[in-house]
Image (tube, rainbow, N blue to C red; front, side, top):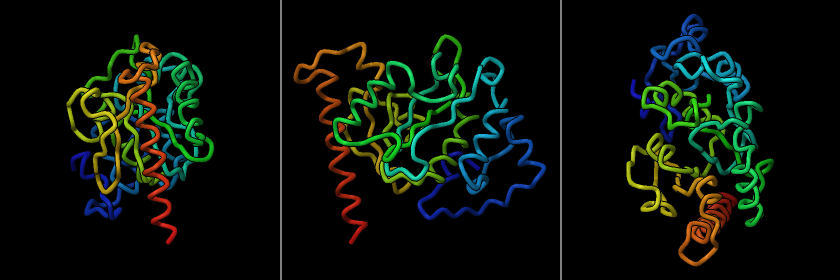
Length: 233
């Protein structure tokens, strides 16, 4: 069963329920599948991630970084992978990038505690903060798909090219597709600049990355309000 078919808008699958033996083996080898519905909650998934060796990153991590925020959030933000601070603390986006992300969200009255759930494509830090390999992404992607199913967000923000490719399969440069809405598995996704990129490009001038990010996050806020209004009637 391909990773792409592990999740659908109806939450249904034709796969067989995973056996107790296979469930216990999930963290040990990437050939053990993780079909939709494997985990009943994020805490159960986290337990597996903390002991996971589905790829080589499990050998070098300090802590697995699963996610933080509201587990019933309307918005999910997906990053690439943990950095040093995240590896040490076991939480995503806690360094300078995370601080900037929280400021960006606060500017449109969104908080991680109430409105957002944050996770990454891979749950363990790649050495020297390199880009995760295709094999590492493939080993970890079923966890991500289960997180999406459990949180059930209305909007998914994909920070950077690695997150965009992992979820949607699109390979375009982030500068070409940021700020656009992509429908994936019945959900609205928007590619956005990674906060780390904004830290390297801090100029607020019109047309610069920081200015573009401000346009994007306002569009996200408007779409969220529109979606919540539609579901409340």
